[in-house]
Structure formats: structure tokens, C-alpha cells
Image (cartoon, rainbow, N blue to C red; front, side, top):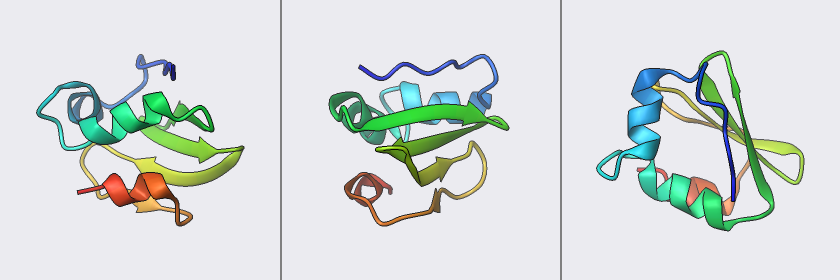
Length: 77
């Protein structure tokens, strides 16, 4: 199970990820089930890595940034 330190995470992003009606909630659930994924909060954004390589950056108010093509990116709205 993936754990993330939410202390420095943007409150908008927290709502989008953790609340059931949030736009990134299905992505968060998929991240929980995938042992190859890790995530770190940097500059109030969530940086998602697969096997140590960054694939995605999620921010609260701006659009997600796809760094590399990855199956997790297909879950973005």
C-alpha cells in the first residue's frame, strides 16, 4: 500500500485524490494496487514514479503533467 506525507500537499489536490468524488480518486486507488509505483510530495504537488522513473506530476489547480507514457496516465480524466 502506498503512503504519502500529505502535510505539504495542496488542499485542492488532497480533495481530488482522497475524496470519493474527486477526479483523481480512481487514479489513487490504482496507485495503491500497483507495487511498482511510488509517490512523493514536492512543492505541494504529487510526483509519481514507476521503478524510480518519474511518470506523472499531479497538482491541485493546474493540469497534470505526463512525463512518460505509462498505464497509470490512462486513468487521467
